[in-house]
Structures are given as structure tokens and as C-alpha cells.
Length: 282
Image 1: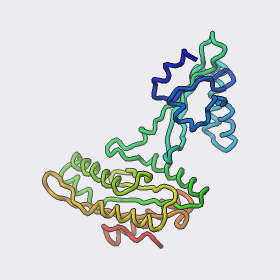
Image 2: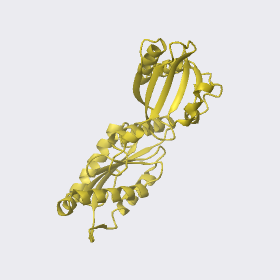
Image 3: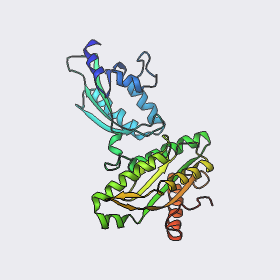
């Protein structure tokens, strides 16, 4: 379909559907993320939504219903947001669909998918935010359950950070948080997710396959991230943190259970030591 080749220049994933919901054209961005499912574009969007809905995906059911209305020319535009994990990461996408021209009986709809995961990152540090941390945690837990493997979660609460804000101001405090974020990223692997989940609170979720030894090593790396002082307006200031961790499935079967265990250990450490990470094993 030569009239749609200009879509290849766009970063969004675009598909042109026939009146029955079958794929008639996809642009390069769509093809790059389709994981080889569309070699001949013999794929029906409505059928895929129905199959996902049968597997219990409420988002797919709503998208299929909305897209069906667009194809029937009963809705001028349909927009929805859904989640889709790939490349070992959790992603959010927005789908936008519009009907084809009224004079064109062959084109049912033009569908565009845009990755909006960037909206789930903390604007100051560039780390994932709480929503993305929770979604990634649920994703890797699902992978671990099916594979019979483990996942680690760590919670980090800064000790004494308020003193930096009080002494030097919030602008300097923000700069320290940015530097700390970079240290935490350096302390973890590319497959781990580091998030800022509160003002001075951070969290880490590992990839599926984490071990007790691996999680203990991660905690040592986190502790090492606080050994060097932060230079603040020519002065050297040390930060410490209370850290608690939990390992699936030994410490909990759900995201909520793991958070509860890690949180309890983190505050137990805060009360007892005020600085170094607590031994996370029971």
C-alpha cells in the first residue's frame, strides 16, 4: 500500500486494518516490535484481543470493544492505555484508532501504538517511579513463578537527608539525590530496575533468577554506594541508608508480601543500626 509508506518515517507503531480487523499494512516501527508474528501480516487484531481477553486480560477486552466500534464506523476515535512487557521490562503503550475514509471500503481503521513508558520515570533522577517499580515487580514475579526461579526486592530509606536540605537548601538536596541515583544504577545490573519511590526513598527489583548470594552481593554494592562522601558546596557530607530486602518465594509469594517483609527489615535496621544494611536472611 504505497499510500501508507510515509508511516515508515514515524517512530510510533502503526497498522492499517481492513474492515474485519485484519492487518493490511504495518510500518517499520511496528515490524521491529512484532517479534516475528507478522511475516505475512496474516493477523487479525480483533481475534488477538479476544484471545487475550479469554486469558483474563480486561484491557484487551476493552480495546477489542473500542476497536470494533471504530471498524463499524460507530466511533470516530478510540484511545486507551495498556501495559505490555517485553525485553525483560514493563512498558506502557497508548493505542489510538480512527476509522478509514468513508469512501474507502477496504480500509477499516488506522491504529497507532505509542510507548508512553517514559511518563513513568522520576523527572528529577531519571529513575523509574513507584508505578513502574510495582509493574516491573509484578512482571518479573510472574516470570519467576512460571520458571520456578527467584526475584529479589530491596527498599532503601535515606538517613539524615533532611539535614542536607535544612543546611544547604532543596536545590542542593536535589543535586545529591541525582548523584545518588547514578551510584545506585552503577551498583546494579542492567537487568535490575532502580526506582525512586518517595522523596528520599528508593527501591530495587532484580530480574527473575536472582539468588540469595546474588541479592546479598547487591546489598553490599548498595552499601558501598554510600561509602564515598557527597561534595556539597565544597563540603564533604556523608549519607547513610537503612536497607531491607526480601527474596521470592522464600520471603513472600506476592509483591505485597515481599514489600511488607523488606519494609519490616528496613525499619528494624533503622532502629538498630541507623546506617548499614540489615542481614536480610531470616
